[in-house]
Each structure stands twice: as C-alpha cells, then as structure tokens.
Image 1 (cartoon, rainbow, N blue to C red):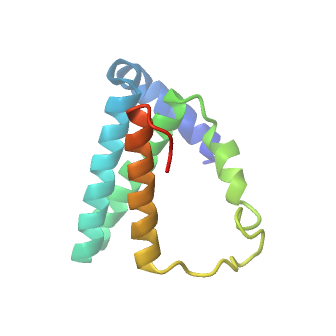
Image 2 (image 1 turned 120 degrees about the vertical axis):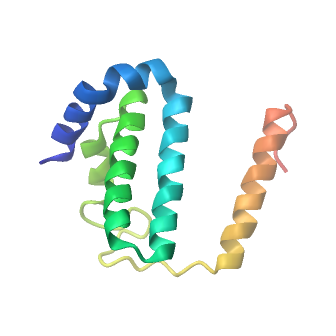
Length: 121
C-alpha cells in the first residue's frame, strides 16, 4: 500500500472523528501514542512496539490530513538523500545530546517570549 492510499483509508475510517476532535486534540492523541511506543521500546517488547508504531503512523497521517498535508509528498523529501546534507547515507555530524537539550531550551524560551509579544533573544 502506498502512503497516499493509506492516508485515504485513514480519512475514510477516522476523518469525521478527527475533524470533530480537531487538530489539537488529534495531535494530543499522537503524542500519547509516541509515549506508548517509547514505553514499548524501553521495555524491549517487540510486539507492543509493532502495535504502537502502527498507531503512531495512523495518528501521524490523521494529523497530516487535518493540516492538509499529503503524506506521500511529504515523505518524498526523504526518498533519495538526507534533506539536510543531501548525501546517501547521511553524512551529518552526530549532534551531542547536550546540544540538543540546549537547543530545545532555546526554542522553548524563544517561543515563550514570542507568545508574550517580546522580541526573540
């Protein structure tokens, strides 16, 4: 099954409920499923991981539909090369964990400032 077909099936099955729930509510379900996948991975439970990956995929497609994003087109960004370094395999330097945490804190701080109408730092 192609991603576009999968998105169409998810839309037929869940679209009315997703629209009723809205983008925010549907996104929250996706986040919950990602948490369940993390738990399955942490526990080393392959069967649970299989189920949770399918849930994450379905909820991601639901969010994409609500946002008007064609998942097949979006996925094509990764079809040939790394979209960041443009190489196969990816040649991007691994980012140290400490840098990722610092960047997340910076992004969160900037978002709070912008939410209060303050200029970014």
